[in-house]
Image 1: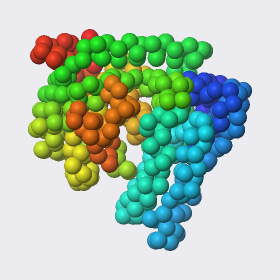
Image 2: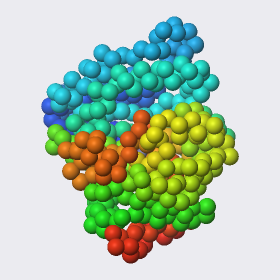
Image 3: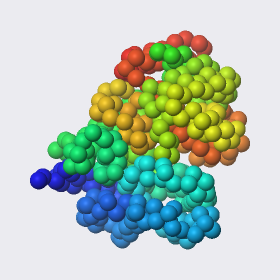
Image 4: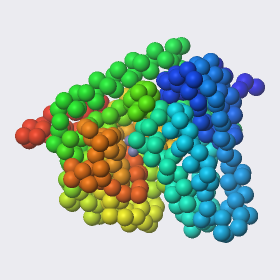
Length: 411
Ligand code: ZN
Ligand code: ZN
């Protein structure tokens, strides 16, 4: 029986993670988090990191069975508690120059049958304790990246009809294609991909559109863009001067909408997987930037709870363009994982905006971001509104229309 995870492509994925994702520098330490199921990838990454001159690679592993043991047998008092000491230590390591690599994987539905109140408490405690580390990552204090491992439980969710090996092989091949490690020289393939993405974001920046207009079946949506918005894509220069690719894969070109200037109706083109619930056929109407009507054929109660999280949860924090030609869209799979699904179709995100999506955003405080139309919320949830049937026009500052996408392809 051959390995369902091709060892040659796995090694290339590790090389891409270190050389493209992180652009790890000689002498730089690395903090690597991963599920234990991803050990084959973790070991390849460690080897590539040391060959690239890494100082010290510190792996921090999690395990789905250990997590479940907590929910089944843990003391109630423990659910308001998180390993703050660990995240404080990570923050200190970033301040001292360490890079950060996260391996995504594990069962996306792991906690779907557990007590939602305990899940919410644990998530809240974790979010709070993680703040110092997350704050450094979101402002790119250091170079960081995320890559994916084809975990078996995840693979079975994506392909429930296949046996274990066939399901894992299918997910592994989809991850490899999306991560552009099918090519013999994936580092060169990524350089070409980054150049294409930069070309798109530079063109959109040059247009400085006032709004984007989406039309298609069930969709007639005008998304106003924030003042001084900046389009981002692909590689990012971190504050330590190192250019990294924070997401492997990445296909999106994205920016900040104006939280008060979104009007019209929009239908989701893919189901949204949110904390173990699948929300299907979302249709919403915006007025003055705010969702005033929301429906879903499945999971509507969960959707409404999400929208009631806080004032900013009904407004947009991101708009992103992804062509149907992207390898992830072409796979036709629903991954139940934002890293992949948000790179399969144009999308919008409810909630928090990115300060990095403003020109000069690194020097802006929350008040300045809000004045320019940036949204604030405790959530950031991407959902897909693009497909091969959607057209997008840019609306210039003086009201002229410029074709941006036709039938899901760049115009
Ligand atoms: Zn996005
Ligand atoms: Zn997003």
